[in-house]
Image 1 (cartoon, rainbow, N blue to C red):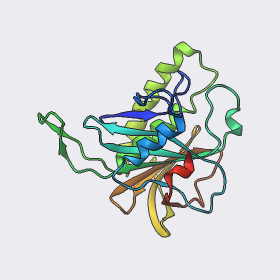
Image 2 (image 1 turned 90 degrees about the vertical axis):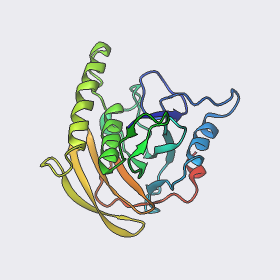
Image 3 (image 1 turned 90 degrees about the horizontal axis):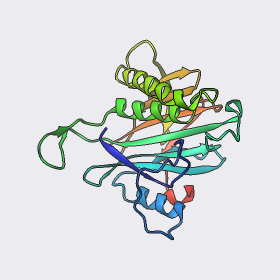
Image 4 (image 1 turned 60 degrees about the horizontal axis):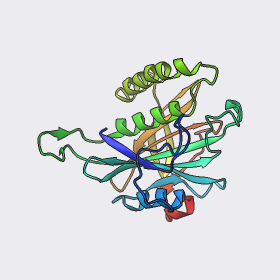
Length: 226
């Protein structure tokens, strides 16, 4: 997916809120900058439903070359840490990725076509998101990028084969309606992806928090996540 990200800056290691060039004026609080990116979207955002009572926070939005918001993520539970404040086993979080359903469309310069967004797009964003905040902390910094590139390539291949043997079917409620998701687990956590109403696809990933029993719903007030 050809997008850039807009979010509140964090450390250079990446992870939730890693900056992709927000371009907001200095003096504007980071949370305000993040919310404004979400408010620009022409589609509703999804998060965990009201059964989840823990912390909620914003991550980042993906913007196409023509400035349209195409996807973004909402976080729930502990904000994943890459700085060592929390051991991997202690992190409990679930991130919900909302991806606008887009048909094949022309590139901004009119010279070609961009691929449509699909459930595989949501699976890819969720899989790469999980990797970005769960890489093995024991790796030397020089090896982390190689590891991430290798695992990211694998995540893309898996997302492109949702009917393969690495995925199972998990039914979870979306706006109260039972919905089938493609679901898989790994040593780093779990990933799922499926279609929703309102012409969007939903991806999600998490660690330390079981996917079983989760439910998704349209976020009524995205500013409540800030």
